[in-house]
Image (cartoon, rainbow, N blue to C red; front, side, top):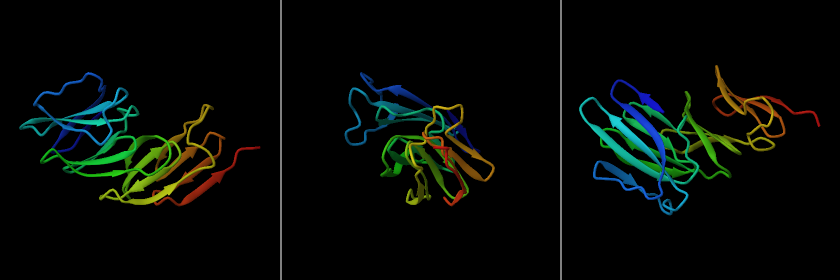
Length: 185
């Protein structure tokens, strides 16, 4: 994944952590209990046109490369499955981290007009600039589908979700339910 603004270009990849050694070029963050045989590491290569910095964020085995971070000015917010991490890119230091207190895994992070939206297995939720929860929403079942429908999309000014039972939900960016269509029993 690549993010860019007028100040920074960030390349993000995920690697298996097993037997991984980082040299002095990396700033490495190991959350408590993160390094085990199943952990993965998110590699951030940050270029500000003057220098290149490398950060390694060690996490659990459920790290994805796409839709894993959002960039606002000099702050990079990263989804580490059950943790949100903020990095000040001017210092390349973690300045804030908060656990996501929801059941199940978390798949994607998106920037909305209200804040950072996390799409998770059982919950979608939005967090403010300090990573405090603003709202959360759960369906009747997990947000996954075995049909040809896409379980999660952001379209225009709304969030559209299908759960495992094929129920449909549409929310605005403030978490207000706009539409709910229950699947036929």
